[in-house]
Length: 80
Image 1 (cartoon, rainbow, N blue to C red):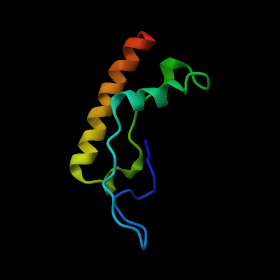
Image 2: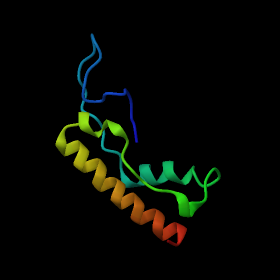
Image 3: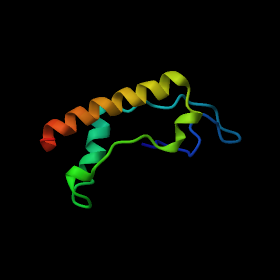
């Protein structure tokens, strides 16, 4: 779930560093809900993007926890 630049932990030249956001489970679930018209619900898999290595550890852990909670929400909705 990218939220900004390709390298959220690295400021662009001339820009101040802003802490990367940890999306809420509800925000993640809302994004995933847009996928079913394009793909069968049973084929949806939540996985982090490759940008996690550039994040502070606390942010990466927060994002992973939010992703787990979003998966729980979606499984209840999708009946999985």
